[in-house]
Amino acid sequence: MTDPGTGELFTEFAVMLAIAAGVGLLAVRLRQPLIVAFIAVGVLLGPSAMGLVEHSHAMDLLAEFGIALLLFVVGLRLDLNLIRTMGPVALATGLGQITFTATLVFLICQLLGMSLVPSLYVAAAMSFSSTIIIVKLLSDKREIDALHGRIAIGFLIVQDIMVVITMIVITALGAATGDTYLLREVGMVVVKGAGLLVLVALLMRFALPYVLPQVARSTELLVLFAIAFAVGLAAFSDWIGFSKEVGAFIGGVALASTRYREAIGSRLVSVRDFLLLFFFISLGAQLDLDMLGMQANTALLLSAFVLIGNPLIVLSIMCAMGFRRRTGFLSGLAVAQISEFSLILAALGLSIGHIGQDTVGLITLVALITIGTSTYMILYSHQLFERLSTVLKPFERKDPFQERRLEPDTNQPGPEVVIFGLGRYGSRVADGFHESGWRVLAVDFDPMVIRQWRQRDDLQILYGDAEDPEFLATLPMQDARWIISSIPDVRINLTLIGSLRAEGYQGRLAVTSHFTAPELDAALQQQDVLLLPYRDAAIQTVQRLIAED
Image 1 (cartoon, rainbow, N blue to C red):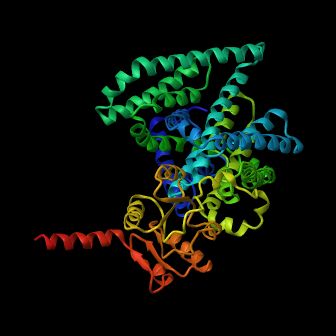
Image 2 (image 1 turned 180 degrees about the vertical axis):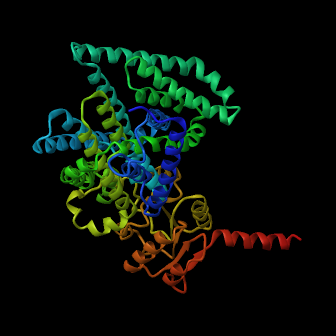
């Protein structure tokens, strides 16, 4: 099929973008990731439905740029320090989940009668989860720094590394055709990979330290240089026999250690997301609705495994390592969907000729089901855990020693003040009470904050989550005169108030909000206090300025 003319192609893209914006708006209202919306747009506009969008080289090119930038940004934000700070749990959970998922899904595919190579691709696709979606959801819920958030991001980074290794293996297998021996081809891949790494190391040592400060004088030039660097390494990687994705990923890793990492990453996200739009629409447009209907039962079975089996695998590994079932459950929900990388792997396998359109369609259908469903599972994760807490008890060890290490010394006298949240506001409140001679227990759900404050011997610090009723039941509240929440989230504070009242706490409460909330006023008793930091600071400022007039 020949590509349409420029005018016709421009009109086609205009219609496609307009419909994508409309469907994207609907997805946002439904709190769904845009990946789901864009694939749906492709199916809707593709030949098997309305037939408004045809496959074109222009769309392929934009899609390849999007994939290259996706891998570049992943490499750019590859935080190996996070894996180290999380200790063995990130590696054990990441590698363990991939191994168990891939093995079990492969066996399921074989029992369903699938041939060997498609079974391997489906098994690999089901093993990886979406870092982009999870980071977005955890950030929106302000749980990115919680223990379960850090662990989830840690093993998702491990998954990202394994994705790149899988792409290298697929590239080697794709090249090993005809009379080419696989062992020799693998050896060549290793040699080429070593050469690529040496080249990037030389650039990092002798070129980038001098070039980056010059191009960074202009923000626009810095972004242009980053894109050129990513695409250039992707093209070079493709030329020497690797995939473009591997080269782009290594390019991101090369810039990850520079001080321009955040500036580049923050400005490339929008460009990346826009270009990925064309990959997902192109993927959706290639799907045959009749074929998807025939694969519905298989897709539902695999989706059920991803939605239920993957979280249980993570939960089992983490509880065996000494974490509480709540932490394991909340972390495990991060793998209750398959990744955009799963779709990229499927597209790579299709281009090489390892799998057919039917396998790509199956993986895409599982992606639509699991991404759409898991989004709500993560958004309502705490409510879901409350309902399943009793059922999940067998997964928890009698001594969850990993989290017990974060608990305070029980030999100290009971606190007079318990403060939730050690942000800028909460830490100053804690210091103020401590300097006034009160016994203070500070609670935070960020393990890094706990470790920093533990260096002080004059303050009790405890790891915990204000939304966890089981944790609140363990608090030493017998001597507490005040329990203070510096967390300005109405929902969390309502949960905290309800749980404390259920535990029989009779002392005074003070909760923080950025605005007056009738629900909080109704939940608080007469002796309790609603803290409004911005309003209180403004009133004090006015009083001070009037007094000095």
